[in-house]
Length: 286
Image 1 (tube, rainbow, N blue to C red):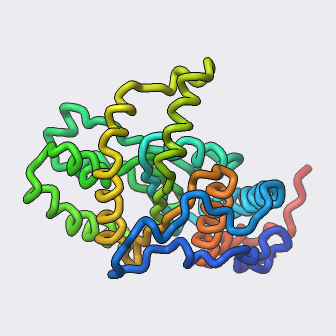
Image 2: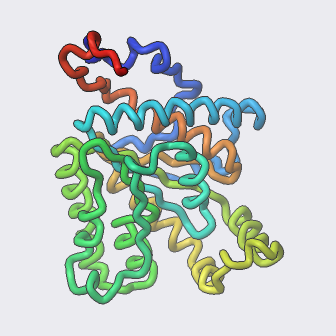
């Protein structure tokens, strides 16, 4: 039996029909960006129950594709998630990747750099977490912190951080040239939604552990961060490493859009299962 079939030939792996126009969320390379062009509270005309059912179906498809990615062992996928505080990075990872095999998925969270990391160039700590063949790597925050936090808080001079956009583009192009599929997701929430989420962390006992008073200090820089995000999107969305702006006030719609984007990206790889061992059809296990 020859199992070297394209993904679409398996009854359980029929390619799905995308239920929305994903270009609505894509940041076109080389175009000017205004965050006002994306409504943070959008629902795409979906009913919540229907959207959650669709997301569940996409999650099953993502499981199939991730298994295929791991089995074939030829492609690698990097998912970059950026957002302001309370933007939903952790929730996205929990819900969208629910059920995937942890053996083929890694998550790297980039917080304040350690002394060792600060002793190297700013991309050093990032590069070692990029995916290997057959793997999906998820960055919860990423190398983009070095043109966001660093910019907003004047941690290094503008002359230095302003060069990093080109560094990042070149770094991602290197990854793409070496076979990495890159999907970058900016979770776009409103200032009012952030206020509600921060207050919920204070008012709900089992969420108290999430609250950090530093988030309130960061909130004071809301406008500066929005501008930093805008420039990030405008300067670093490329054909091989595109940004998607995800309406994220409604968590259920956020999950739906991201699931559609990821399944679509994986299906475009046109993956195949490795050929079966020769003579397998004649083997009988006793």
